[in-house]
Every structure is written in structure tokens, then in C-alpha cells.
Length: 169
Image (cartoon, rainbow, N blue to C red; front, side, top):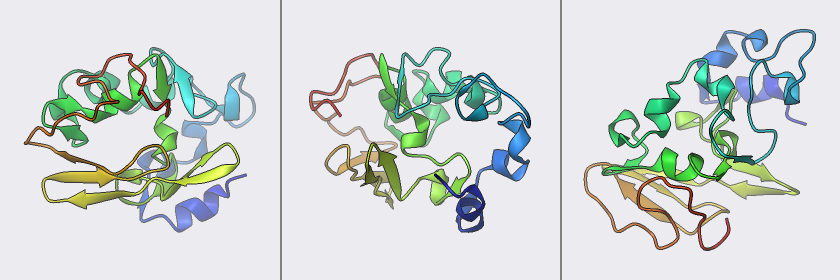
């Protein structure tokens, strides 16, 4: 089980929602949702269809901008390809919590590792000039540049979509 106080106390960046206190996301006495959430959020690493799965995040974040076709709303993009959309807006979407901590972590609230079943997989994001690079337990090193399109990897859809990566990750 995660020690939330320790996670917040040792985080380089604390999520503003966590700074407001627990009850913004977790009602103090009862909830019918997993982890005592006030709104829907995936209970595990995946959500089957992003529609309605992230109501908790939508309390503060504009999901239409974050997950839409307009990549200019997020810095996590490869030119015109919104990479949040590539990971989340699909039939078997990856939960935001695979890469981001809801309480506190490093830059962009990115976790150094993510729990996946019995394993702790590395997230491995780093800034590069004009973009970023990620090498994780999910895929080999991939780089993105915000203003210069790279050739999309063969196992990722070129624009959002509901396709699954060929590797099954």
C-alpha cells in the first residue's frame, strides 16, 4: 500500500489537488467507487474506453483539450500528434496513474516507477531539447519533438485512435 504522506513529503512536485486535502477526491466517510473516489477513475492500469472513465480528473483538468485532436493543449506531443491521446483515448486506454502520481512525484508529476501487477516498472522520462524521451517497462526508448514531426513508431496510431500497439503493451 502506498504511504501517501511520504509520497507527498518527498515529491519534487505536489499535485495541487493533494495540496487541497484528501476530501477533494476522497469523501471522508463513504463511496461506492474504488479507493473511495468521489468520481470515476480506473481501478487498475487500464480503462476500457476513456469516455466516462476519468470523471475525477475532469473535475480540474479539461479532458477535451488534454485528450482531443488539438495537440497544442499539451506539451506531450510530437508536432501535431497528441501523445496523451495516443496513450489514453483508446478502447483499452492506459490509466493516467501508470505514468503520473495523483499525489506528488517528479516533474510533470511523473513517477520514477509504476506498479504493474507484482512488478515496479521504470517510467524513465527525461527532457530533451524541444521535447522529451521515454524509456519504460512498456516500450523501448521513444523521443518526441513538439515542433518537428518524427516518424511515428510502427506500433502506435499516428493520431489518437482506438488501435492497440502491436506489442500488446
